[in-house]
Image 1 (cartoon, helix red, strand yellow):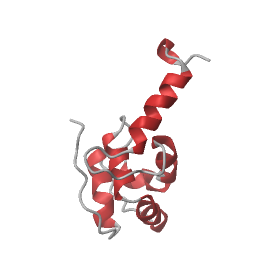
Image 2 (tube, one colour):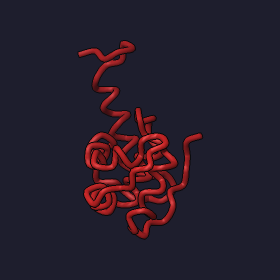
Image 3 (cartoon, rainbow, N blue to C red):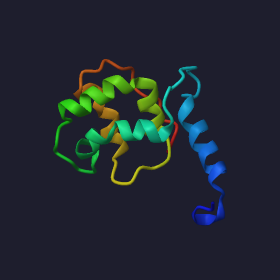
Length: 108
């Protein structure tokens, strides 16, 4: 099976899994792949849309807390996510009183 750009699906899966499993430099293991973590954060979509005045919902905060800081950082530092402002995503732990350490930003 081919995906756009002529890359094979197994290579894409390997890259996604490797991107989503470990937060570089901290040794924390994220139990979720990038995509499963992303799906878990769907309730936060409105709160992280660019220029959104919408605060995170209770469902969003529950997702942030259950996902955990290492996995949230993997998402923030992972591939671009359409319709998501990374800076707003970085504010979710504070807005949800999750008491996480700030993520180290590895993407520019």
